Structures are given as structure tokens and as C-alpha cells.
Length: 405
Image (cartoon, rainbow, N blue to C red):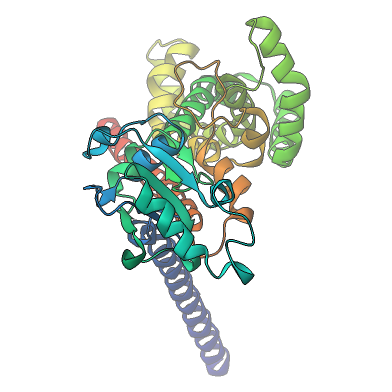
């Protein structure tokens, strides 16, 4: 008997130690992942905001010494055409790219292996006071050859979070304005949860309170089966069926819009919301229902005044899980939202979400570069959004529980 007790204690201690070690390792892993995510993301603000290996050069008489990335983009797009607009002299801007050197010199003039290219570029820059030249650093002319390098300011926090243009492949200076992506993500998620939460709660109440046993046994597995359908299948369904219907119903140029994405995400979030909310409602003590009915309340009054308030914590958890599914979904929204990185002004416009952007661009972003770091920073935003949702849900849950007591 003593040996059995000793063996039981050893097993109990071993199990307790294994659970402790498992919890510690999980916590450490999550901590390291979070640190890595933020470390890579915030490296964006320390990386020069111009393509690696290139530089911008102007005439030494030009008083401009530094430029904002957006100004550089607008100059090369000819939206800024005078140096006075960026704090310089009243000169019309002359944009120069490395290929333009052949308008001035032949291959023979540039020497073997283009060895004379820096000298020739220096001549071109020194002869044009209004020039801005975008050239590789290996061919860049020196100050002695008649050129001055202009510094391009690094991307700032406000540039990233409040910037309205996401152009990671723009040259000479890419732009990483995440505001369109943040707003697109929030808009699609909001549409999804507005559609899914009332419907999901209604189905959960029906299954728990109104459906007979036969109907409940049929519907519950069917609903849970929907959660197992791959998101790419939902994406195909939305692209082939839902998008054309939305386009036709609202007379739109295209059917891939924020509304279409929200509608598909609502369908995807329904199984989670229904299952969790139904479990919470079913756990309401039978005595509370019977007490309410005994006091003369109808079945609907009992559901509204007793059952739903009591299950408020579980319903909040269902809402959070549904929102989490909508915010973090990737493949479906990548296929059906139109992937337009613009600030939405209507739910019937194409948008792009943060998860879709990461999925579409990470494979093409050079490791350690600006684009790579910007995508990690988008991951940080998703992390913070999920954390805020969880905190708000916890506060709402505690408030409901306090009121019910």
C-alpha cells in the first residue's frame, strides 16, 4: 500500500514538473517570437529610405542637402517640378537616371568597363544646376568631380502609421504608408463582425433554447464542419459566386470589394461564434431558467433577461474569437478584396488588408531590407490589434459578470 502511494506521488510530481516545464518553454518561445517580431519591424526606422547601393546627387550650388522620401517620389513622378517646393532655389527640376547618360555620351566615351562613368556623370551634374541624379554608388561622382550627395531621410513613425501610400517597389525611394492597410483591415473586419455576430448569436440561442434534440444533433456537427473548410475554398467560392453577385446587385465596376471580403469572413467566423456562444448559453443553470418561468416570465423574456446576461462572458469570448478570425484571415481576403492599397471611402471599393499584404509580398522582399522590415512591422500591428481586442473583451466580460452578481 505504501509502495502504491509512493508511486502515485512520484507520478504526480513528474506530471507536475512536466507541465511546469512545458508552460515555461511555451512562455519563453512566445517571448522570443515577440521580441524577434518587434526587433525586425522597428529596424525599418533605422534603415536608409533609398534603395541599397544607390544615391541621389545634385549640383554643389544647390542649397538642398536632404529630402523626404515622399518628396523624392514626387520629384521623379513629376508632381514636384521646382526646387523651390522642397526648400531650394527657384529652378525647374531636371530628373536624371543612370540610363540617361547615353543621351550625352557613347559607350566609347565612357571607357572600358565604364571606367570613366563617374567623371562623365560629374560633368553632367556640374553643368546642370537644377539636376537630381539617381545613380549607383559604384559609379557616383565625387565632390571633386562636381557633384554633391543629397541625404534621404529615414522613414519615421508618422510616415509609416499615417502615410497614405504603400509603394514598396518605388524607385528611387519606396514608400511604406500603412494607413490604407490598417483601415482596410479594420473595415473588412468590422463588416464581418457586424454581419456574423447577430446571426451567430441567434443561431446559438436557437440551438440551445428552441431546437429539439434531433435538430440540434443534426445542425451542431454541420456547423462545426464548416470551420474545417480551408480558407482558400472560401476564397474560391467568394471569387466565383459571391463577387459576381455583389457586382450585379450593387451595379459596381468590380465585385472584389471590402463588402465581399467582409461577407466571406462573416461566413468563416460563424462556426466559431455559434459553437462558443452555444456552449456558453447551454451552461446557464437550469434552476435560473425555471425560476424565471416560475415568476411569470415568457420563454423569450427568460432568454433575453436571464440566459443571455448570464452567458455574457462566453458570448464575449465568441465575439473575440470571431473578430480574431476576421482580423487574421489571409488567403480568402487576398483573393476577394481587390488588393488595392488605397484608403477606402466606401464598403463597395477594393481594399487591401494587412495579412493579405504580408502573404503577397514577403516572398519577394529581400531579407533584411526595408520592405522586409516593413512587413514585419505590419505583423507588429496585427499583434497589437489582437492584444487590444483581447483586453477589451476581458474588460467587457468582467463588467458583465459584475453586473450579474
